[in-house]
Length: 280
Image (tube, rainbow, N blue to C red; front, side, top):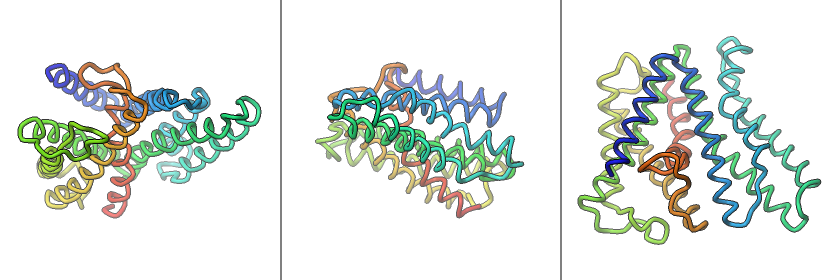
């Protein structure tokens, strides 16, 4: 628990420090690296299941999916978001994978390799790239950046609230076959923690967030995002259990791998983007 707390504090310090000095460029760089590391761990999980995804081809497309929308918009479209960039890159990745499976894989494993590769690209970098699109949603860079930080804070504090509440009063197992340690009491504590943190940030930093994100709206949106976060966590747990793994990786003491860090954001990012799209 101590190492987890220290790692969390150091990570937040690194992220906030990077954003303070480098702004949106740091946000895009951090997300790009985390998406690539998460994809690497996702493929490690699928390899434990017996699949053979195309790693290096996928990493190149992962970088394009996460960093591409920001820099294409920044340098080629005069600040207007190129919303079709992500789907276009994903489509090209599928074409590239189709070409590769015909010439490089054992005929008995071609379809499995294709499915594992494309699933990784869709589930990890494509879903996470919606945070970059949220960053680009507002003409003022500060609004997009703080909106992204708000989403990350709401998601990660759901994890913290669920963990602490579950340790304190958790009794009823929520998904014993997927994640035996998760409880309904912990889930409720996580959702309420997210709502409180979301409302608190919206109240304290009103001038830095979109106008529609009032404390009440923030609490209600955080409730929804927290529930999606719990589902996102359970999906990663189901993948690890299928591969008979305890952690997706071990690069972060007390937390695990990059997948254990981003799991709560994978499903939350597109949902948050759609919500803020309606608020803008």
